[in-house]
Length: 191
Image 1 (cartoon, rainbow, N blue to C red):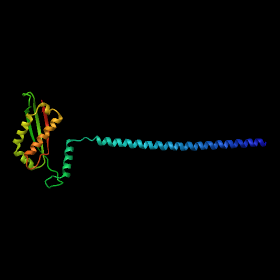
Image 2 (cartoon, one colour):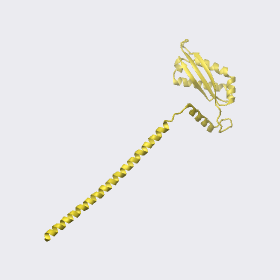
Image 3 (cartoon, one colour):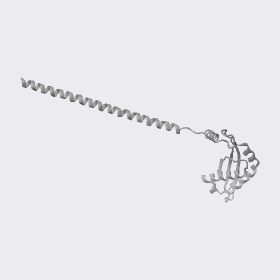
Image 4 (spheres, helix red, strand yellow):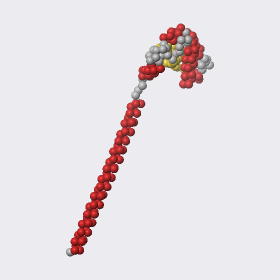
């Protein structure tokens, strides 16, 4: 009987050890589950943050910009720079003087021509008044300059940009009370 009791005690100890091992395994499995849950939670939060960043970036770039928006931005920039005539902070009023030209191109023997509509952008009444006084002189210069260009010179974007700068610089050379802001081509046909 003593042997049976010893065996029974050994079996109880082994059973207690097994139960203890099972509970240790359950605890380690529970802590493993907690760790997996935390990692999963961190991944979900990171994915949501990345998705929000992409959405905000896409919505910022998807705004359509109109010509009016660009003009308002230019006026706002002009306000911050000041008018240059002592009235800082007041946006200068923008005026346009429009001219149309149709000329034969140089070296084409009448086979190629250019039809160009030009808008001259000015920002004050003094320049506008002076521009009106010398309008025939400006038209003459532009006609002569356009007719001296070949089709190769004005059929590229760089050629058109050079032409724009050439016209702007020449007109500003004629003016005594200020400068024009820009020369815009509203229609440019070369054939």
